[in-house]
Length: 371
Image 1 (spheres, rainbow, N blue to C red):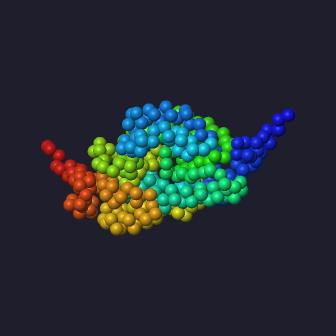
Image 2: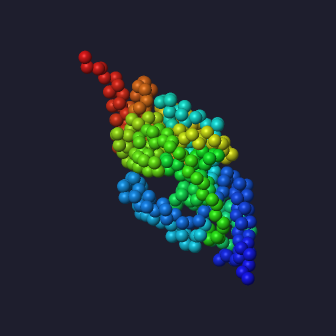
Image 3: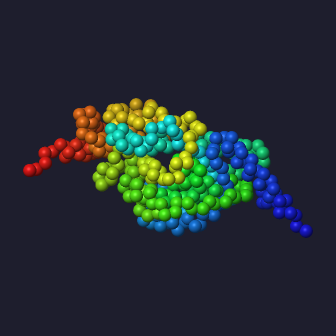
């Protein structure tokens, strides 16, 4: 007679009961380490391959050549880390009531709107350290096992895996949404060769809502679940290293690093809680910064003010490029004009080009109307 299901041995030498108990321990350890949710997924992402392939075919990845280079590996965890059979997906909230509301900043054109995720310290290292600690706890319990931690650091379909792990569903804006926490959170993954029991995938709860599509300033969400990165302000201000196409400069408004509009209007974010991580709280008042003051930062100041921040990776030149566009969209005022004119001879051709455009916007507004 075969042993009861709870006592059957798996490839890893654990019984089903052992694995269920281990999964519960992993959830508990994850919560103790500061994650707000921990889930477990299998690695079958075949349903996402056609959509990923079509997204790449349309060129929606823009200049992010690594997306094309990695191809379908992004949807095949075992090709990225051989031996992987499960992915432990974690969520860490970053919203805070201590932050000036994003919607309020958009109404103040002399302020700079910075995506809320980037206001504090860089989440990548913080979450990777926590995932490493989680792996160490697992190892102390079961002995050596295969694993690798990722936080936006490899070709991983993190939202698809998080959805399979029960952390939420992928909304029409392509962000993950949790019914009790909205979408203001980071995701991380621990790939493992331990065949843990998987969690149940939640249902889709966006219904007929299209608020994220209509709110996008550049219509980058070209259809539900389809984002053309080439139109997205987050891409234009962060991933894009060159000229911002003129057609998108006016819609950018005062957004100088990323864009949160699609999350701002999502009804589910009324359930978003406050982060427990002090490192995610705003530094140097970047939740409501003065554009003229930011434009005066030299490179040394930029590096000092963005130390440990995700913002630093775009570099000083792109930072000035983005602010020049915002100043071009700001109300005409002596301080704004003086700030722009101070960089007419900036060493960077990229900065000079965007400064010239910004000054031209103010000249057009001041020009007399023909009778």
